[in-house]
Amino acid sequence: VSCWIYVYAWHPEQDLPLEERARYERGGFGQFAALGPGFVPLRHRGNDYLIDRDAQKTVSFTGVAGIAEQDAMAQDSQGLIADRTREHLSPTDMAVVRFRRMLLGGARELAADVSKRVRAGELARADQHQADGALATAEASLAEASGALAGAEQQLRALTGMTPALAAEGLSVAEAEPAPAGTPVPLEAGHPAV
Image 1 (cartoon, rainbow, N blue to C red):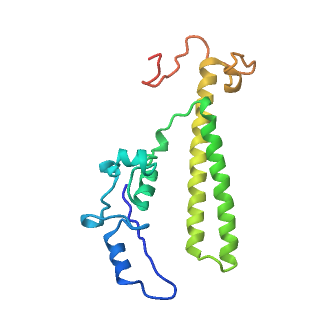
Image 2 (cartoon, helix red, strand yellow):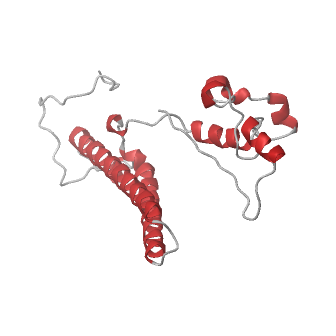
Image 3 (spheres, rainbow, N blue to C red):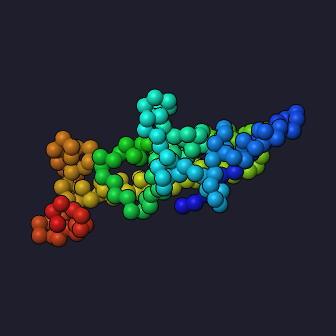
């Protein structure tokens, strides 16, 4: 995954002094990352953001120079974009679904607020598109997690005859119908019984 980040600076009442512009061009000043060849930041995931462990102990919690670089490190530390289609949730992953529902609620609130502000002329239509995109992403994430959780619950019921809420307590559910004895139950290659 690649992306470009554009950063700009201005002063509302005067031209930027040449000295300040030179600092921006060199990078490593404010939100401007220090850049190498091809406009690639000098500090990046590939070199662990040139983290300075001594500075981390004495100067800053991150040990990374530059605000932009610290922001990028915080974002990159979350890992690469995950392929949620390969995600296998179990009933104990209900917290994942709850978290995604919370994100969806926040995205809905954001989209509604942005929509009102666009209608009032306070924001541009592009802001509405961004908010709508965030909402669609949250809806898709919740749908994927809910589907995976439902599949896990169904699999648990088929294998044990228990619903997830009661299975943790070892209680059987009367209306559950386990597979008849001798019926093969397909197990994935990674299942401990295989």
